[in-house]
Image (tube, rainbow, N blue to C red; front, side):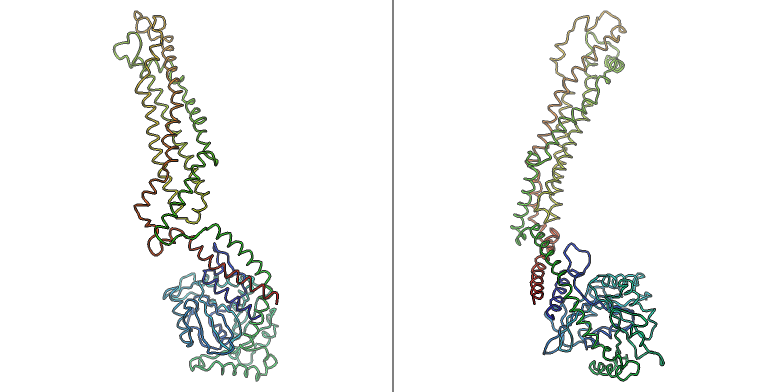
Amino acid sequence: MENLITLVNNIQRACTALGDHGEESALPTLWDSLPAIAVVGGQSSGKSSVLESVVGKDFLPRGAGIVTRRPLVLQLHRIDDGKEYAEFMHLPKKRFTDFAAVRQEISDETDRETGRSKQISSVPIHLSIFSPNVVNLTLIDLPGLTKVAIEGQSETIVQDIESMVRSFIEKPNCIILAISPANQDLATSDAIKIAREVDPKGDRTFGVLTKIDLMDKGTNAVDILEGKSYKLQFPWVGVVNRSQADINKSVDMIAARRREREYFQSSPEYSHLAHRMGSEHLGKMLSKHLETVIKSRIPGLQSLINKTIIELEGELTKLGKPIAADAGGKLYTTMEICRAFDQNFKEHLDGVRAGGEKIYGVFDNQLPAALKRLQFDKHLSIENVRKLITEADGYQPHLIAPEQGYRRLIESCLVTIRGPAEAAVDGVHAILKGIVQKAIAETTELKQYPTLRVEVGNAAFESLERMREESKRATLQLVDMECGYLTVEFFRKLPQDVEKGGNPTHSLFDRYNDSYLRRVGSTVLQYVNMTCASLRNSIPKSIVYCQVREAKRSLLDFFFTELGKKEVSIYHGPNRMAQLSPHCFKMQQYMKLYPIIVFANTIFAVETVE
């Protein structure tokens, strides 16, 4: 069963290396599901002394105020022989045999993360201690709970520490080691208070009573240790730590343990409890309980691991092949991905995929409906015809036909077609943009490289914008050409007899009568409708030629040109690859995590069989 504790230690180390601290992450998390013992207590509760007593070494920083400012994941490994040593996960090739150096490294590593301030961080320090004098055990030392922020700390430090502690002990797989000093009222214990809130039944809480030897004369902690004052599911454990004077004199930890045993055995109040008191008993009890918890969690852990393996394999499949390391290979990969996107885009336009049919809808529905809404007949009312013709005649009335009046009436009608023409251009542009977005979403390769996905999208949109401007210019030119040159044949075919064209001998007012003006308006309407029918056919041709056809031909040409000029500089620099694709870093993490998960699954299976 000791192999299980070692395995959990290894998985915890792997989780820490991969940035899995149980927080919300895109990566699957195992940390929350692994049993661990979190040490909780207020400042000056004796928390550090308890840990050092369990380990049997002086290795934790001491001082006033908040000394523990980062979680310390302490893994104890029992070895049969050899010299005691310690290893930090952030210094994997260095062994510490001097535990004063361990203490200094904890302080230095804390400062590296938080700076030389008094702030806190939730990123854990990972320390392993190998010794023949310890039991296999994993403990997480958390910052001490406090009630007041001191100078140099943020005003929210009290809430920040409590939130950090809660984030660990709220997890159902966390065993709470609540440290409370015996020389203070248990009702004011910070550790018991927060443990009761997250574990009201006490199923996960172990109570440890420190400073029993410092209680006022005539008082004792028997009621607490016997579970009468505050009952927990597990028996309370009392410890007697070294005094500050002992620490200053560097009293040997072995001697301190011996004095602790003698204190409980010789004390009249506690002698009947001596067999389950002291730091040695605490370490053995916690190790045995941790083994039991791990064994009970094996089925759930196996289920989680199997599920995670499936998720990782699926994610690795989505992420695709790793990108080449050299610049040429990266450029080739980029071009291939862009071609895959371009092919998807063309398939949408050509009908292989849905989307291109919407463009025909613009030509067959939107444009005709917009032209119909222009209502030229209302624009050619008698009043408007009279106004434009008389203005065109000026001081000298027309002789046979009001040519200038005709031209102004026709131009005033045709110029309104610019609006529907522009709307048709914009409508097709919007559809093309939508197709680009669909093609990007459907290009699996682009999902692997978010930054490249954005760059390709921006490049495509810029090209479509240029094509829209060119299409708008060409389409509006068609309208302007119809306004600039009228089809003479149409007017030559009109009857010019006296009855229909007007009698030049009539007075000016007779020649501007309603019947005459109505015939002029009708003639203009016929010409405008004829021109409208022609534009209804030519405008789609212009739009398809300038936008749709051009998009199929050269949507990413400008992007490729710019990419070539930059010599794929988007890949250069120490961290440029990560900027191009955060998913590449994620894939590296998955590829590290995958064998660990598979290994854990194998070991758990073996242990279950045994």
